[in-house]
Each structure stands twice: as C-alpha cells, then as structure tokens.
Amino acid sequence: MQTNRLDAWRDELTRRWQWRRKHNDFTGVDYQDRISVMTWVLVFGFGLSLLLKIPTTVIGFRALGSPTSVEFSVTTVMALVLALAAAAGTESLIRLHPKRQANRLGLTWAYWALPAAISIITVVLLPSIPTRLLQVAVILLSGLLLMIAFFSLYATVERGQPGFRRARLWLDALAYGAALLLFLFVYQSRTRSLLSGTIVTVTAMLLAIELLRTSTNETRHVLMYSVVVGLLLGEVTWALNYWPLLPGLTGGLLLLLSFYLAVGIALQGLQGRLTRRVLVEFAFFAVIVLILIIVFGPGF
Image (cartoon, rainbow, N blue to C red; front, side, top):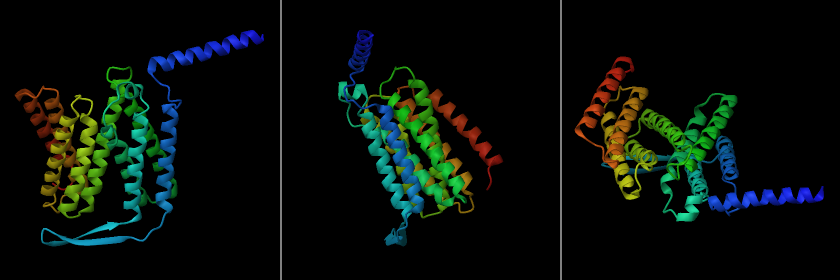
C-alpha cells in the first residue's frame, strides 16, 4: 500500500514537472492566484474610496487667456492610485506568461490600459450611486469585469492559442464599453475643452492601444496610430463643446461612433487592408448610425 502511494506521488510530480517544462513555467506562481489577489486588492480599493475622507484641493491657472481650475478630490486621488495599481498588477501578470519568460517580450505597457480604465470608471461612478446596496453591487460587478479582463489579457499574449479569439472578443467589448462610459462622464461634466479634450484624448489613446495591439507585432506603429485616434477624439470633443444644448448621452454616443470609426480604420491600415471599398463601407455605416442617433437620440 505504501509503495503504491509513493508511486502515485512520484507520477504526479512527474506530470507537473513535464507540464512546467512544456510551458516553461518554473516561477512557482499560478497566474490564476495572481489574478485573484489583484482583483480583491482593487475591490478593496473601490470600497476604501467611499470611506476615505481627504480635503479637496483646487488648483487654479490661466489657459489660453481664461481662468481654469482643476480639483483634486478623494475621487481623483483614488482613481489615479487604483489605475496605477491595476497597471502594476497587469504588468506582473503578463510577466508570468510562458512566452514572456521564454522569448523575453518587450515592454508590456500596451496591456495596462483596460484594467486602468475600468478602475477609473468604478471610482468615478460610485459616489453618484444612491444606496449602499447598489454601491456594493457595482463594486462586485467591477471586480468581475476586472477578472474577465485579466484572464482575457493573459490569453491574448500569444496569438493562435486556444481561447485567443474568445478572449479578444471579451476585450473588445470591455474596451468599447469603457470608452462609452468614460466619454459620458467627461462630456456630461461640461468642463472646458482644454480639460475635457485632454481627458478624452488620453482615454481614447489608451483604449485604442488595447484594441490595436494584437493586430501587428510593430509596437511603434500601434502607438503611432493610437496617438492619432486620441488626437482625433480630442478634436471631436472640442467641436461638440460648442453645442451647449446637446445632452450628455447624445454627445457620448457621437464620441463613441467617432472612436469606433477611427479605431476600425486604423485597424485596417495596420493590417494592410485599407482600400477605397473599406472606406466606403465605413462611411456608409457612419451615415446609418448618425441617422439613428439623430432620430432617436435626445437633443436634435
């Protein structure tokens, strides 16, 4: 009986060693455990953002000849801190991937954007929720979305592996959802174009990096196209701010449409498939969606 147990134990160790050798995983750290720890740390941070009290600091300055002010409240500080924590956790997760260890991938900053965006959205949204029960529900939902994002990011490190397409679809859905919510927050705030345009530019650039990073191995090209997308969205925001009666929902939808078109065209360009026919298809889609927004959206 004792000999059988020893043989079974030896066989189990052999199977584990062979699996780690195949996947080049000798770190001793399970990526699922890392995802669990990161998710719960961020969930704890979301709850802390509701309880923490710090004085609000207002910084005033003049920009383009007119006075401007920026508020640093507990929401601003916690959004920044948790966004940085999400980015750091994503970096540590991606570095556990066998391909990262075997091939020494370059910088993994392209993976940071989506978890950081979800963290920012959650912190900004929580104070506006009326009841504690709903706040807890939103915190748990955000934790679930973060967990999905972490698993999907890990699954898309190496293209062609099982589950890559499904993970990519999840990431696309989360990225566009995050873009819409952030655009709505920024546009409904009705801040000056200098601030709102800058926030939208940075947000669009980060989310475009996530949406474009698996389309090519040229990280420099992904960054260049993403910067163009961000600048374009900043210009659109600047133009929409001259329409003071436009409701926030309609403005957010127009920004999302612009973001979708810009990312779609950039994706076709990175893959070398940008032709006149593709541009016509995007133009036709834009006209149809714009008509739907005009007909059903408030404010027109």
